[in-house]
Image 1 (cartoon, rainbow, N blue to C red):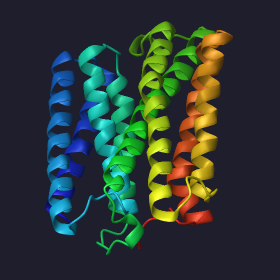
Image 2 (image 1 turned 135 degrees about the horizontal axis):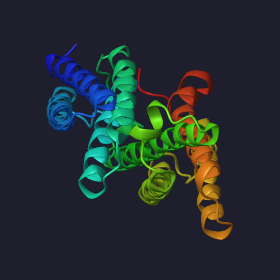
Image 3 (image 1 turned 120 degrees about the horizontal axis):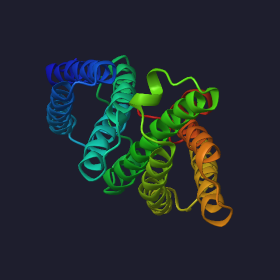
Length: 271
């Protein structure tokens, strides 16, 4: 296992620990240290993937280890870019927990480098795969916001203003967070499907042939399309939007992993 990967993993764990410490103590110095630690983790992780690119001789997005590792990296930088524009209290705590979970999956996946089959030796590989995973990252942010919304709403409805009430943003702020993340993630998801179709035409002579991962990508797209449609036409906000964001992300994870391990198909990872 690469030392750069292990170091970035360790820094992410430290960032998660310090974000959790800030969540319980609300000490501003700890929050600043948390953000700095996460930036360092993101930079070291980026160096690891660059090193992996030169080591493999191709874009490192073709195995479960590489895809999930890149997922964690894009989630980190999606959060940091979001954080520079919007203030969402304790958002980093939930995001870094998800980043660490992804890194655990990546760490326990095979790190072996495999020769690419002919269909993957294409310039469309970095374009399609990176866009699709970046979409997953912003949808992951919406998932975290949805979880925060349900936790906050639960305390308000029970009128027991405990640990979460004072530490999480208002329900309105969390609903706006959901909308902002979907406004970026859904177009990227759409673009990922479009680029994948163009690549499929080039590789297999057809834009769509109902491979299991293609099918589940479409199911996920319809879930998010329905959420956005209901938000803008029927005024869906709050709890229903949060639940749909969570369901959509679970469908995203099934598309990423479940299809590969349970249904197979031409989109299964190399090796």
